[in-house]
Amino acid sequence: KAGVTQTPRYLIKTRGQQVTLSCSPISGHRSVSWYQQTPGQGLQFLFEYFSETQRNKGNFPGRFSGRQFSNSRSEMNVSTLELGDSALYLCASSLTGSRTDTQYFGPGTRLTVL
Amino acid sequence: EDQVTQSPEALRLQEGESSSLNCSYTVSGLRGLFWYRQDPGKGPEFLFTLYSAGEEKEKERLKATLTKKESFLHITAPKPEDSATYLCAVQANNNDMRFGAGTRLTVKP
Image (cartoon, rainbow over all chains, first blue to last red; front, side, top):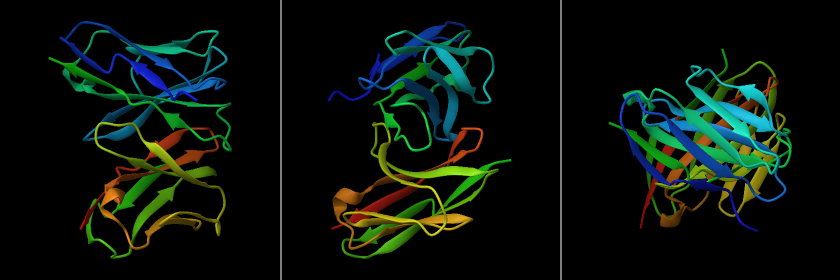
């Protein structure tokens, strides 16, 4: 069974640009969550999607947005990039996102903002 | 505000030297406490989920326990391949997931 895949794995952008990251969950998983990981702040929850609807959202500015497609694949978008957006962006999938589900993480997308 | 604190930040052990990692938390309604292992450059790998105080789970050299305020990850006779960052996360009743900063474990042969 294929794991969670994220593309691209590495990305370099400049301030002010926008970026789109993609996540393909494990087959059959309908919940997709996004996290930002930095050395200073650790892992922080961005948002969760289930059945194409945002079900939960963390404390991030509106520049961070996402969506989920009917095949459960998800994208997140960051507009007007800032230097502080440099981070490892992780996607995790689970069957339904319930507390009894296990979240499986992808390898992440390393974003560098210059 | 929900908080998760892991200690120590870093731990160096000799191969075979057992120890414990701590995760203390304050959360409004605990739905679950999760332990993950993360290797450099990779996403976290799921280890355990604990739901209620008194619960324990084991996997190979690892054993996770849960009380009302903290969780411990006990590592028995660790090997160098156990070297990694161990992350603790709590899920509150509002489904928010909050992670601790992690404990970076190094096991020397």
